[in-house]
Image 1 (cartoon, helix red, strand yellow):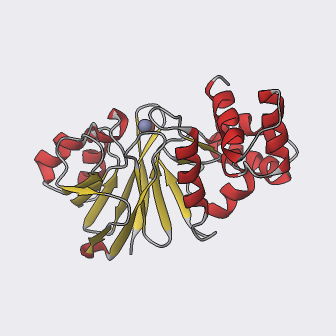
Image 2 (cartoon, rainbow, N blue to C red):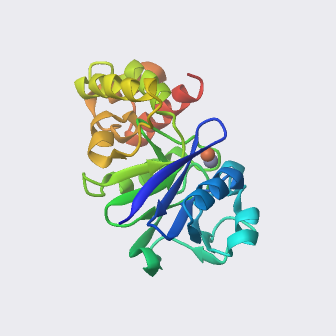
Length: 254
Ligand code: ZN
Ligand code: FE
């Protein structure tokens, strides 16, 4: 049976481990040490690594893990990441037969220009693109680019589970309340996720349905968010991209 375990790293990163009793796949292993601890403790062989983008907190553990386990390493063709064994782009398929997993690669540029996400029909590993109640900063891409990546993800089935790479949920909710404070689903989410964090439990995975209901960056077409953007911009936004850009800039300095 497939189990998905978050390995915590650095301040707030989650390295997702997908495994059965024998084999494992890691998503974005920024640090090798906690991964090696986990794999050794459970007697797992590392088959593959999936990389979403080139930032150090997502790729830093690759060299040590590669030297120790020689896994296949998949990552975005459009980014310069030394050590990949398989370069992937939007539309590609990855099979990990030992764990019965097949992933579709979805190009999700915005946080970085080559960022990709991995989708297996039930679960989405989206790195720093879509966060629980938030989205990644625009380090390399434009608002237009990021919004279309998020819109693509929002069209996945409602039940899709979202495994992002950071525990940012409570601070994202704090920001969301400043622009969508009358959303009852958001207030309910705050109670649930605060309770989880107070006992040290991850707030992830969330679902696409939950994100569409509460994540301001997936709600740029909603009247409440258009109005919030109008206040930030001091003029009526022209379109959803302008709404998104205003919200993202406000979050940057929140
Ligand atoms: Zn990043
Ligand atoms: Fe990151």
